[in-house]
Length: 97
Image 1: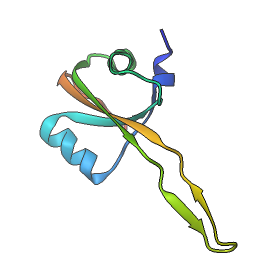
Image 2: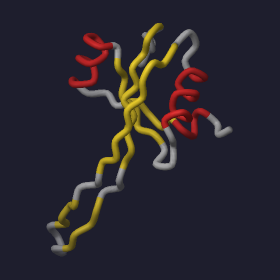
Image 3: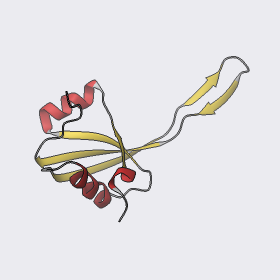
């Protein structure tokens, strides 16, 4: 089994994800491109104590094409994979104060 911290890279913190947390108890994470849904579920339950995952949805996001103004060349940002995790019980503290 992979290390859970190699599967889950970081949480996605935006206004939209905060609304999803409050309304439907779903959290969004950037995950490893090779991670599968069962691996993501096991990693979330291993990292955060007292959390039970009910559903995992994944999506692959293509990196944007960006232009360098100085020498008029194009490059590409890296592709990312995101996981939208729905919890049946428990809560994740993204920021501990």
